[in-house]
Length: 305
Image (tube, rainbow, N blue to C red):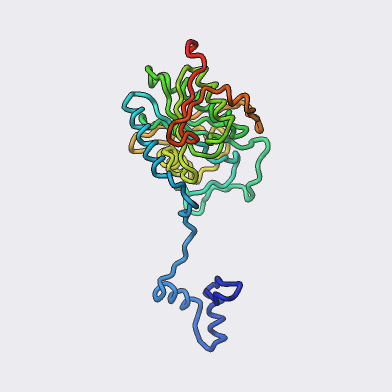
């Protein structure tokens, strides 16, 4: 560790440098011996970073988890759908390195580009996922422009039209669980405005529950769907949009998960601002418990539903 009174408290030296320092003090020792001593005598090993620190947690973090769980259980008992939504990270399209490995003949790895510079002709894709908690089934809209709230709600609308209505014939309400940030964040005005348009167009009452800040990994879509998609395409360069769609659609698990995917070629603009007047026109009502995280959006014209 070094002297705690000095500015440089922590130092990192390789076995070779440690051996040189010991040689200077009159000790005849090799770098290999240093490595063995570190492992056998001192219990050290080379380790990578592990993501465990989330920062300060909200005092009502657990209470919000319990609240979401109760609302989800009640909706499922009533036969109404519950979906978990989120955006997977953007992916470069082209012959780029993809983390992970795949079975191939020895000494014959897939050759990919050295640098991950975006190919402007191929661009990136933005996968927005929707996980149906009750059915253990997923949907991914593959966007080609920006990850915006408009794109997020358009993906939910597509799920309702293609999957939700046929699967839930008596659907009158939809409960959505989402992270607290990103395109579907609790403070994103465009997210709420687009949800109001969705409620008006479908006649559905939308119940929204956000996970507390810093707890996105507890969102079911992360460990029920996205992790399996990532595992399925490890080591496979995403050479085209068709490749991404095919890899996502082939994602399955022993517990019965199935995922569908479709390309969304529409353009979604960044920087759309929502005024205070527009917000006042929303038929939105906050729950008694943390209304900034839990709220309901009702159709403004129920007769059109």
